[in-house]
Image (tube, helix red, strand yellow):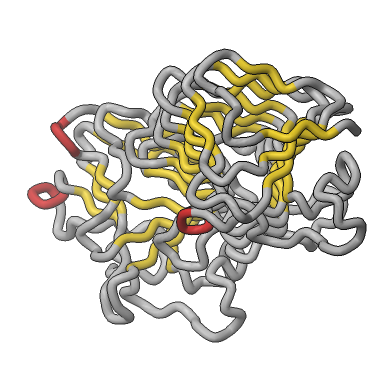
Length: 353
């Protein structure tokens, strides 16, 4: 495939189209700021070196990326060392092979980017080892593959795809994530369906190191926002520094519905110390509710619980759960209407109850 070198002088302040049938080799020494529309045609290949500091792209307000590949001709984002798509673009023959962390990351500060049928490979040398840091709304991914990428090794660090606290409108559907360290992190105000796959479709045993969706309850808010968590292949991991930093469906006394799908597992962990209890969920039953809490396969449990949702903390048998490890499901209305203000559903495991 013909190679087009994208240097520092490339101007992304105006509309640019990357054409099908070309390899675009980004070898500039600085990050690229996209403040207009960047269109990427199906079949284009984009390759990146590790030498670029900070972000590869910052898609600012007013900027967006429209990358519409197809099943037969996906758009590929990969390392300069990856000779499989587009050939030996860095000219070293077989002198290098791709691996995790070969290139940096992409920041989506603007709204309205779309990535359809794209493949993102061998990323993770950027901020907290993320691939996408997403702070804008309406940035959508559909039928994309994220493989051989990093994501943070810490509980509170970012996933390969990381949604920030202000993102409440986003679509992440029909995607495949495997052979990554930590696949996905998002705020507690986001919804996600069950269409994504967290293993290699051609090898079901090839998953991610930390097989879960990681949720910071301090990022985002459930205030006046109906939420649906329907993914049941991997658990949701709710982490915080202290048990008081729980998911709150009570803010400003506005109605909230938190909907769970069949088989959804939510695990809780505190990151401050070994003795601090994990966060929980706070509701006010007169205005908020958890729909589907009693569906088959739904559990609320400890991050150390490998019996439900697998070894999400990737430590084998090094840790095991015990009682009182997280803060439970707490109902403010029960303070005056019942002997205890914690629910004791049979699928609540290892909590303060």
